[in-house]
Amino acid sequence: MSNEVMRWEPFNETVSLRDAVNRLFEDSFIRPGAWPMPFDGGGLSLPTDLIETKDNVIVKMSAPGVKPEEIDISVVGDTLTIKGEMKGEVRFEEGNYIRKERHFGSFQRALSLPTSVASDKAKAEFENGVLTLTLPKAEEAKPKSIKITMKK
Picture 1: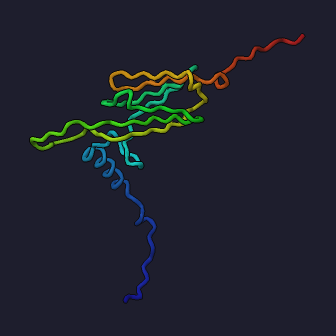
Picture 2 (picture 1 turned 90 degrees about the horizontal axis):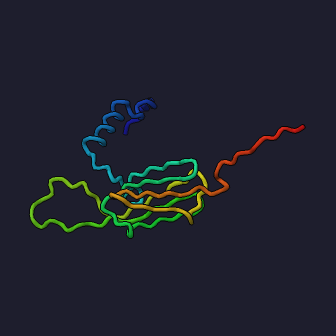
Picture 3 (picture 1 turned 30 degrees about the horizontal axis):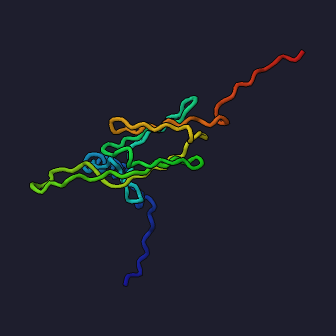
C-alpha cells in the first residue's frame, strides 16, 4: 500500500470544450434518432410550439400517425397536459430493417401556460399530423384599457 499523497487538480475533473463539442456532434449526427425524444418517463416527447397572442394561447404539436381519438387533453390550473399513444404497424416478416426511425409508444407533454385560459371555450383541431389547440385567455388575464379623465 502506497502512502503517497497526490495533489488534487480541480480542472482535471471538468469537461474540455473539445469533449463537449465532440459529444454534441456525436449526439446530433452519429446517433441522430433523437426525434421523438425520449423523456425520463420512458415515453416519447413530441415537438411542441407554444404561442401567446393578444386573445389566445395557441399550442401546436406534431403528432404524425396518431388518431385524434387517441389524444387526451386536459387543463388543470396553469398546466396543459397532452397524452396519447402512437400505435405500431404490422412488422415485416421478410427481410431486415436497415434503418428504423419511426417511433411508437405513449407520449405525454405537460406545459406551463403563460396566463389563465378559459378551457371550456378551447378548440382542438387535427390536420396533417399536427394538433392545434386554441385556448382563449380568461377575461381577467386580458389586458384592460383605462381611460384617463381630466379633473376640472
